[in-house]
Image (cartoon, rainbow, N blue to C red):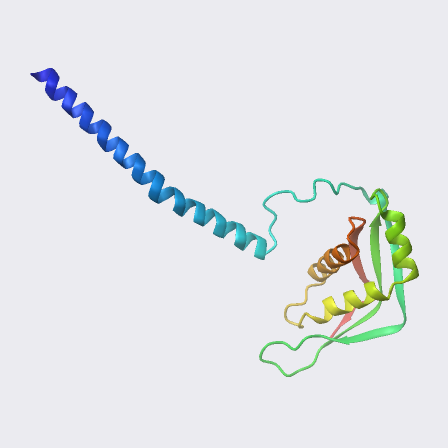
Length: 170
């Protein structure tokens, strides 16, 4: 009789374990997946890199070639209006320098395009810079965004960095 009671207790514990495992799988796991997806979205919004996205973009400083684009006269552009303020702010630039990766497949083609017709690159940089207000302007972030947009516009990986030359912010 004692063996039967022990068998019933073990069977009940097994059934309870099975029920709790099913509850865990069907209730906790979807919530964990939703939380993980939310964290990924938040990280992508604030530009955190969870994974190394630039594995194929390995280069050294020796591989970079600067391409300078200067303006005939110093450019003055109005920045976007800051929220809750009617004061106008502006940025002055003497030019831009685009760093090109010489080891990229389309380096020569991109260098030729940018050298012969730089108006599109200058215009894209102007649109990107003027979209910022004085409160949210960060030169490093703006330069990275310009490089990203230029890379997308020319569909290349040769454009690595954009540098603002002679910047004055007021």
